[in-house]
Structures are given as C-alpha cells and as structure tokens.
Image (tube, rainbow, N blue to C red; front, side, top):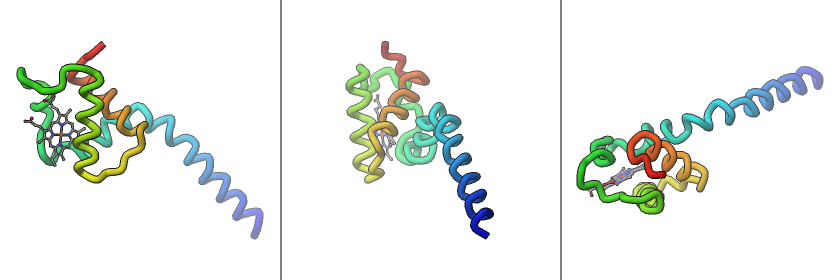
Length: 93
Ligand code: HEC
C-alpha cells in the first residue's frame, strides 16, 4: 500500500521535473498565444510606426499589457514573452 503510493509520488515528481525543460523554450510563445492575441494580432509588432523602439521599451510594453489584463505573470514569464517577441519580430540587439 505504502510502496505503491511512493511509486506514484515518484512518477509524478519525475514528470513534473521533466516539464520545465521542455516548456521553457516555448513558454513565451505559448503565453503569448494564449493571452495576447485578443486585442491585437502580430501586425502591431510589425507595423512601420510601431511604438516599441528598444528592448527596454518592449519589456515595459509587455508589462503594461500584461498588467492591464490582470494576468499576474512572474518576471520570468514576462522575460520569456519579451524574448519571444524580440526574436520573432523586433530583433533588438
Ligand atoms: C486589452 C487589450 C490588449 C491585450 C489583451 C493585449 N494588448 Fe498589447 N496593446 C494593446 C493596445 C491598445 C496597444 C497599443 C496599440 C496602438 O498603439 O495602436 C498594444 C500594444 C502592444 C505592443 C506594442 C506594439 C508596438 O507598437 O510596437 C506590444 C509589444 C504589446 N501590445 C504586447 C502585448 C502582450 C505581450 C500582450 C499579452 C500579455 C498584449 N499585448 C495583450 C492592448 C492589448
């Protein structure tokens, strides 16, 4: 009885441990797809007169949109989305 519980717990821990490794790379893309496309699509990141002109500005804008949605993301989540938007659209150095 106890042994079975232990095996079950161990299996769950292993599964949970493996997850962040897989999820990390796509976290930004997934968060963005799930939360950030209801008001604007990716056209706002590509338009000629886009407002964000620096890495700093990008982070501020992501935080602004995230806060106004009341999402309560961790700093890491903001960073992941910033990294995703930068590597896909903005390409700041
Ligand atoms: C409640 C509606 C809304 C949602 C949802 C939203 N945004 Fe925005 N976002 C805006 C508005 C409004 C602007 C400004 C558009 C403009 O200036 O025409 C904007 C602009 C931006 C810009 C700047 C684009 C530029 O001009 O360079 C970025 C980056 C951005 N949003 C990221 C995000 C991210 C990341 C999320 C998900 C957390 C998100 N947005 C979700 C309303 C929203």
